[in-house]
Length: 204
Image (cartoon, rainbow, N blue to C red):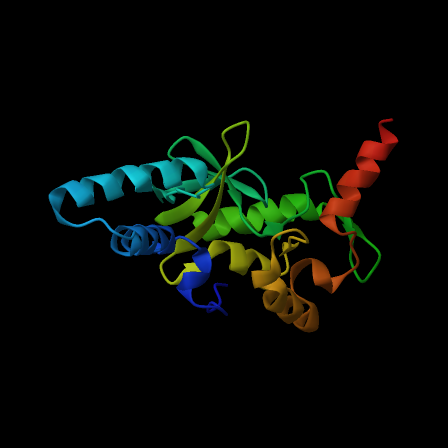
């Protein structure tokens, strides 16, 4: 079941604000540099500006957009157009993670999370936007289907949690799922990042 977004679309962080900031920066220094008038002065200002930009740490990142049908890899990742995408801001259980139902039965909640994501993506056009690539070329992105944010839907329906590092946007969705006992919240489960740490510890 797709639920309405809790936040507006500017929360994507992919709405062109980087470009706006850059334009303001350029305008400030082109207009504000003292004592330079006429064509010659303008060219000198351009040279000064070039030096300033070479010295200043600036984020020139432009959002990467992927559109098409997608397949679920697990509850955290999907593939679209041959590119692997990490759903930014959320953390779903790995495929091997299990959870307990209210009746104390063991379920592979990681597989159920993938199943839910696959159902959501099935035969639908997906648009993913992000500007972060990991060392293995995985794109961290926010993905949408029509008016719905896939990342948020995973959390609202209880098959993922807000990422403790960058998932502040989805805290309300997580509380919604917890109160309504959606998905994993129907029983008991370990936080995905804690489960992974325990698995790593076992292998030492």
